[in-house]
Image (tube, rainbow, N blue to C red; front, side, top):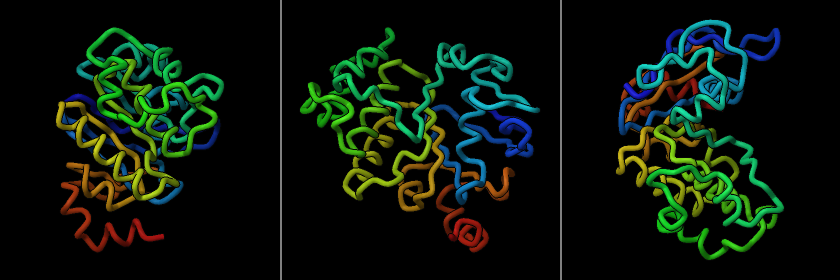
Length: 228
């Protein structure tokens, strides 16, 4: 396994959010975290990255226990985090946003441009002037420039137009084709049904259902849990 999360408990201050979440991501596998708003998807991603308080359980990445390591050490070991609020540098150009994140490895500026040619077209535009879809592509590309070995994607399609969602889907499929494991927190069932191999459905900080993605989407229980 690339990533194992074992009985994870986490929260914010005195407020517990996760109550024993367990999941696995295999090499070259795309795994979806599904659930309504407030189910614990983003908290799970942030806990894996070391951005919220962990109260119990373990996080193991390629045999290394990350549970008590700071976020920067997790990044150095190969975790790449794409936050839901993007956090690009608005005064820097697209090219500068990418270069500032670069670490030695197979992902280079040229390779990122080949994967996302739109970014080459706007490489001299400041980040603050980009559309929401362009900012999302830039955020993912910037994370790739750090040459991660596992990608954590938090709500990558939220608020995006269908054409951009299609672009993000092709991007995730391309990464999967290259063997990049991905853990994806998402509510868009059409998107996750297309790109994910397996899924975990969260409700109030616990895993209620798990399994093959296509089988999950056929279960009435899952439809009920995910209905708004």
